[in-house]
Length: 428
Image (tube, rainbow, N blue to C red):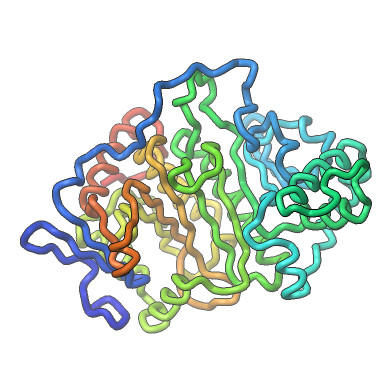
């Protein structure tokens, strides 16, 4: 069986000089891995660590829990009490400090597709829950002050008249408030900026420093937000879920967070995948976990998911695939979500906090009826794309999939011996 599509090339071809040509079996993306540079260090060069100021605890960036009024009004948070985790929704401004959020969900202050885009293009209106939360939030002095401050920031950013008026115009405040509560670009931010007990600024908290239990709650919370965006916006055809770690990978802050962005089209990559799945319904099983197994690229397994070195990505990558293709992410059972989460957590832990990464989620949207599993790709941003890639659409990397697999497995075994990843993993 050759990979579906018009290109008959196999996913992996090794040439006599050691060059490896890759073709992504799901999208057709072409990548050439050139020999000789795969063993070099991956992490970014950081300046010498600087001691942390204890007085600035939890106030290092706008996503920190000590600066919650610098983000938009919170949609929901996950709170931990002992071994119990639960979700709290629609808090008011003067209730934000009543509990410690392990994870927070809030609209992005500067969204990719604005509320005006959805409202003016499609007639989208805020949900009753959003309107109710907005009314309650603005009914308190703290809430009104918070929204007024954010409204000024947004108005200044686009050069709007009245941004600095005293007091703020009522029409301006009401208009901005609608946009602040009804955004379709959302953020899931973790509690920690640095690991608990950190003494210097090299000790960032990232996905791999969460416990497996914390990472599962992070994943569940993100899936819940994904479901709600589809439910609340009937014009959303796809919701992009991604995580940028470190500024070289596109992050504004070195603070662990995911983003969810609703769009009114199916992305180009998803459309390519759909075309191939229609021709070969077993695409993800055959050219995913089975092909990876045959090529010696599997990194680890759980009962319903597998992690393996990715093929045909712009950057060296690790993929995590659920084996469940008949259900969407929010329809998976807790154990199935946990299987994906434990592998994803382990792959981040093995990659390390000094490596800039993009974590991209792929799933089957509600309007599509094809056997497409929840899967995540963790891309190591360790190279720079240039004119050659732009002109040829052939991407050059320096680390081949087997080296990605070997590096990750070696590190995972060390982490497993120290009890830092889930004991449910079968490694190698």
